[in-house]
Structures are given as C-alpha cells and as structure tokens.
Image 1: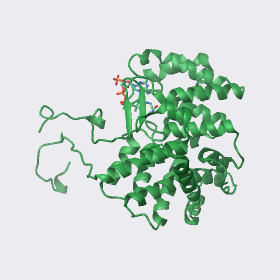
Image 2: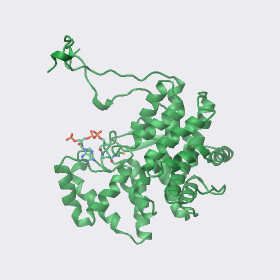
Image 3: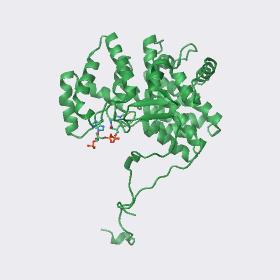
Image 4: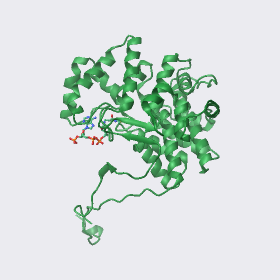
Length: 379
Ligand SMILES: CC(C)(COP(=O)(O)OP(=O)(O)OC[C@H]1O[C@@H](n2cnc3c(N)ncnc32)[C@H](O)[C@@H]1OP(=O)(O)O)[C@@H](O)C(=O)NCCC(=O)NCCS
C-alpha cells in the first residue's frame, strides 16, 4: 500500500466512525441539538440537571423524574477519605493534574468500578457528575490551607459548585451563569475527550478509566485549555488598542488564536452567543468593561479569518466570566470538565451498547526491510 493507493485522514478529520442519536452538530449552519432539542432553548429554559437528565435518558424529565435525578446527584457528592488524602498530597500540582489523578483514584476505591451493566454505569456516571465538582472545589480549598466545605442540600448543582469552591452561597445571577456554562459544555459529539472515552471503552475498560482518560485529553490547549489561554491572551494584550498588533504578531509566528476556530463549526459556535451575552452583562454589572473591550478588539482583529470559517468558539468568553467571578485561571479547564461529565458518561454508555474495538490503521512510510546491524558494525 502506498500514499497513492489509500487516503489518509490525518486527525480523522471529516471521518464518521459511528452513529449516535444524541448530538446533532451542523457546522455550516452553526447549530447544535441534543436529542432534537436546540442548545438555544436548553440554554434559555433548562437547568444543568435537566440537560444532564435529557442527555442520559433521551427525554426531558418530568418534575418527579428531575427530583429523583437531583436527589441522586446530591447523594453522590461525598468524596472518599482516600481521595481527599491524595488531593492533599498533590495539592501544589495544576488542578487538571489533580482532577485526573483524583478521578482515577475514585475508580480505585469504588467497589462497583467494574460494573458494566447499563444501570450500573449510569449510576456511576451520575455519581461522577457529583464528585468531579467536589474534587475541583476541595482541591482549591486545600491548596489555600482551608478545609473542604460540606455541601448543602438546598442548592442546585451550579450553586453547589460555587459554594463548595468559595465557602459562601453565590448570588442567583452567578449561579445561573455557571449553570448556563455547564449546560453549554455538557456534551459535544465526538470531540477529542469524548472520542478518547470511547476508545478506552472500546477495549472493555470501565467508566472511571474512560473518564480519567477523557480528562487527560481535555487538558490540552487545543481542547479544554483554550479558556485559560484566552484569559492569558487578554491579560497580555492589556488594552484594546494593542489587540490588532498582538494578533498580527501571533499569526506571523503561525500560532493559533485561542478561543477561535473549531474542527466542525464554520459558522460561529452556537454556544458562544449565550456566553457572550452573559459576559457582557456581568462586565457591566461589575463595572469592569475592560475585558469585554479587549475581547471585542480581538474579535475585530480576527475578522479576516472569519471569512475562512475561523470564528469564536465556546471558550472565547467563558474565561472572562470565570475571572469576573473571582475564579483563578487554572480552574477554567476543570470547570469545563465539571460540565462535560454527562457527555462522557453518555458516550461511554452508547459505546458499550454495541461495543467494538476502535483501532484504525496507520500507513507505513518507513524504510524497506533491511538486515539487522550488529552493535560492533553500527556507526
Ligand atoms: C480547535 C482547532 C484545534 C481546530 O483545528 P483544525 O480542525 O485543524 O482547524 P481547521 O482545519 O478549521 O483550520 C483551517 C485553517 O484555519 C486556521 N485556524 C484554525 N484555527 C485558528 C485559530 N484559532 N487561529 C488562527 N488560525 C486558525 C488553521 O491554521 C487552518 O489554516 P491553514 O489551512 O492555512 O493551515 C483550532 O481551531 C485551534 O487550535 N483553535 C484554538 C484553540 C481553541 O480555541 N480550542 C477550543 C476549541 S472549542
């Protein structure tokens, strides 16, 4: 076989590797639907709990089903002592390193880790959705020399996360913006971390192994790391008038601009709109318009690339929102992970339903067969 006989799809770009009834992404139209429901309607009308239920069950919940789902989330927040000990031991590492290690440790101490029945995996997925935010928050407290906070039973998922993180009840607006952020990050088809989760599941490994690997995939700047890098970019740029020259220099060095571009979207990422609105409102409320002004100047400077289909993505505005909420930069990617747990669980469940080893081919382009060279004869 040679390059002329086969087509190589580097990065599996534009390759369909399976079917899924859940997430419909139209990159040209810039639309996203979960089980037929538009992300815009979910962002406007639902909560993270409802969206997570929809993703995992295929239907929006009735009030009773939502209450039962919420009760499972609330019951799942406790972290085993062994996991807290590990977090303490590695508290100085980047929160994504800590999250990946702690997620793996959750599997090591979970008596049901190898339960691969659909109900068992679903139950563990819901528990992970509750435990992942608890890990992020507990680590942040511990590294500041504070004790992890006891979760309250009267707060929803997003408000609980902020409460566990900061030790105080967030305002309704802050909780709603975090809720919106979780909804928008909950699931996104065969993105790199979800594909990783499916590859791990394809070997018949368990949910904790798949989610641990997914967290590792999410940590890279080309995937989840972009929100953190957008904030770094905004700080480096400093004032709106410097944005155009900064972008020009980066592009001259052929570096990508963080928060722009997407493997699938050619139109604007439909999730970005909601975060842009949230970011603008929050900046105004907090009397800190400078970040919004810098992002606007970056968007203007990126206009020539918009014609090529390189437009803002979901990560462009979230960093500034977290920053305005007083959340440190290195927690931005972990927050993405908190939102994405339902998506990873869904992908694992669907992979398990008709499991198959994911093992593509690599076209060999090395030397022809040659005789082994003994050590004494090597140059
Ligand atoms: C997400 C990403 C990895 C997708 O990469 P991809 O699938 O290879 O992108 P595309 O095939 O659409 O790229 C098409 C062209 O646009 C350019 N492009 C893509 N993203 C760009 C960006 N952020 N800044 C500048 N140019 C970009 C590519 O370099 C490519 O140019 P070329 O044809 O001259 O090589 C890439 O857009 C990126 O690195 N973005 C920044 C990181 C980010 O925000 N990630 C979060 C994604 S939700």
